[in-house]
Length: 228
Image (cartoon, rainbow, N blue to C red; front, side):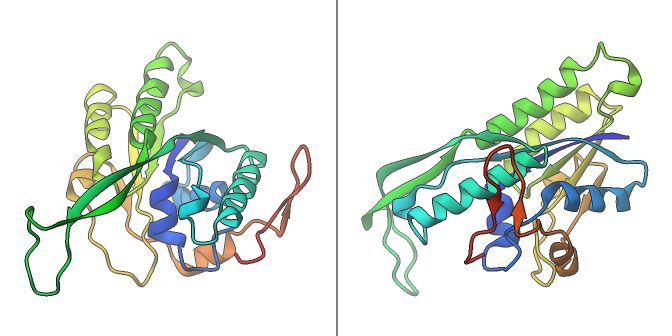
C-alpha cells in the first residue's frame, strides 16, 4: 500500500517535541514504523513536511533557533523528505487584558504582537488533494493508496472530508502529534473523516527513531544542534 505522509511541522514540534531531547527526529523512519503497525502492507512513497521559517527576534534562542531549524531541514531533505515553506505574519494587534478571576472584556484591551503562521494549512490541503487528483491516470500499482496526516489541527477537516467523498478508495490515516503521558482528546471532526487514528507517540518510539549525530548531505553534513 503506497503511502504519502503530510506533516504539519509547527503542530508536530509543539505537540510532540518541544521540551524533550527528541527534536533530532528521523521522521521518515518513525512514520514508516507507526504506519506498518497499523497495516504491515504500508510502503512509504513520499514524506511531505510543511513549516515556516523561525523568526529569530521571537525565538527562544534567537538566531541559534533559526540555525537549528535550518540544519534539521537539511537533514530531512537528505533523507528524501520534501519540505514546503510557508511564512509568519507579525502585526501589531490588541487583546483583552488578563486579570485573574475577571472575565475578558472587549472594552479593556492591551496592545500585543499578533504572530500567525500563514499558508501551512492551505498548502497541506491543496497538496493532498492535488496528489490524488493528478494520479488518476496512473497505473494502479503506481498510485498512492493511503495518505497519512500528521496533525491535530481541526482546520484540516474540510480537506479530509472532500478526500473521503471524492476518493473513497483512498485510505486516510491520522497520527496525532501527542506524546505518551500527556492526555489529550481525539478531535472528533478528524476522526469522522479518517480510517484510523494513532492517538499518541510513545517515548520509546521517539528515542529509537533519532537521526545519527551527523547526517550526510550533498554538501556539509547536518550536525545535531548542541542544545537539542
